[in-house]
Amino acid sequence: MSAREDLQDAFELVIEIMDKIIKEIRKKGADALESGNYTEAMEAIDRTRKLEHLEDEIMQLKGRLFYLLENERPSNVSVTGFSPVGEKSDVRAYGGRTLNKDTESVEKQKKSSMRTYAADLPRPRKLHSIVGHLWLLAQAGGPTRPRQIFDALEASGELTKKDREKDPGGMIRYQHVVHGNLQKYKREGWARRIDHGIWEITEEGLRYLRERLKQEK
Image 1 (cartoon, rainbow, N blue to C red):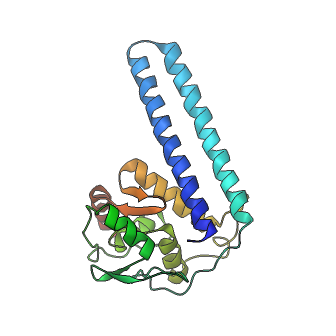
Image 2: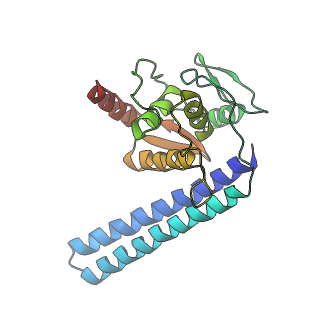
């Protein structure tokens, strides 16, 4: 695993914990409001705002750290084949697809409950979109890393020069969008993070994706 992936995993864990804390505080605030304790409710709102601001600062710190590391350009990969890449990847068969050795070790520890390979899902109009990223996650057919989505987007030909530029925080713009969408999927229940830096789509996510793709027809 590269230094960038180690950092990504660490920051995702911190953000995940903070999201849980924010969710708990919001619930307490809602309960306080319902019981008429407006002072406690306002305090909860203030705390969540401060924590969300801190999350933004953490993401900026993440960007500055990533800026110090060399950005590896992905190898050519198939957008639909979705083969994991990497100099030390041990690619093995997994339900007719491929699986990175790191992901395989996680799979042994925690058997995935999602075995539906979404090969029947039509390709969305745009891969670099909130629906497109979810579709790519579905195409993995099991636990996967964001790097696989990056590689598929690079191979798609959709990314612009601006997408590949670094944002003010030092992160590659399109990669920042992917990570942001993964967090959104988690909040909405469309995907789950089963281990550090390893994601998979949920049944609810598949239902949402199918509905959105129907609307694109």
